[in-house]
Length: 267
Length: 276
Image 1: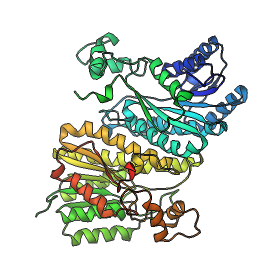
Image 2: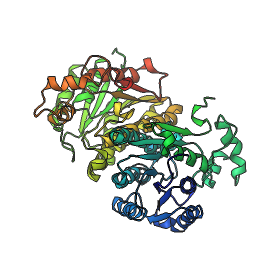
Image 3: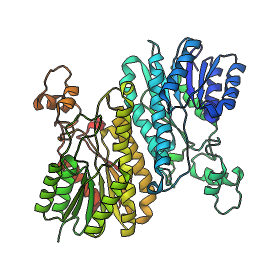
């Protein structure tokens, strides 16, 4: 897509899952990448960097927890210093921890999710927005279908993912005069470890002793309008790249759903 | 006893003044007994003059005048144990719980990238986590009753982004997410959960020099009339703000059996502001 050649994108949660495919797709489009993740993900982050470099683009990695504003600011600053500019911010880092009814969630579970999924996004913008140039930029925040509707036993996650929509809408108003666009992306079930794991399999198939991905495809597909159980990470990345590109130059303040029709299915 | 909430017990946070007081009095007029909770004191990072214990006492007096039984307690919604204890005591005294209004909220101002950690975190703690704590403390009592209605006070900032209040906007959006999850979780218990979304309401939260100044940065000292002219531009109807009673009436409807099949709804009380 147009307009990403020689641009620089900073991506949080870049070591795995959709963060990895964001790195790959931005590199495909000719952009360099500042790839950030927590120190524990250092090895995987190295793989993401290798994928960018394999595509002939530069990648600066940084180990920073989005809960730590100072560390984040330092990592973004180091990346911009090395790559020379910043055009795109992808706030992708997120967690999806074990669920419980809202009134049974622990204080820790609630707080951790808000700290990473909401405050971490604000930190990311706060640390990076000052590096965007005079010709504007694009901020893409990864929300979820749980940013548009609630599901049982996800009050912490759902609240955080709704809250980033509020943050994005405010930022869109605040940054519009600077030609900086702000949008959210709302994936449904994505084929990553965050969704496709044993806990999910057991929740969806309580009737089986040790269910696998194959055992949940029908259950998941039944929730979607399209006959697929989940979207692939690259489908989310393609939406992010579109929003970051000049093809979306007049799109701001929107919520782009990538969910195979999950949120529109009523029966 | 007669009225649309006859025989019901309603717990209201932020009950000392503003929307919370209006809910307490309006519900009492319709036959409800009231558990009135408020911090009655300042919150760090907030420059709006705080509610006081005498404000809460005035609410108690008004509820009693309306014929309702009332218990009140000074409680900070950031204090999990205190919220639970006050809830349990109130429910014990009044014999159950049917309606919950999570109304306590604060405001402060700064552009998103200039907000301090403290202003951001305090906002989330009160306006989002405080609502969750209120719901968490009260849900078991509603479940025990086998029915109920929760009304969470969000804002037009729960539907769109407002400049200079990213933390408030994020928290108020977060409340909508919480509502939608709770609505799914509590529906099997015949408990409904909805949000209301007021535009500017004529309360101390907006009628102060701080907020007035933000609306009219061109003026040194902003009068109520000058603020009104600026605030009117936000709304579709030709009014500068709604009154607390307008929000209370919407909540009364949602609390009553007239809304018995309404759940997971975000109801604007905004003079058309969000559609403008």
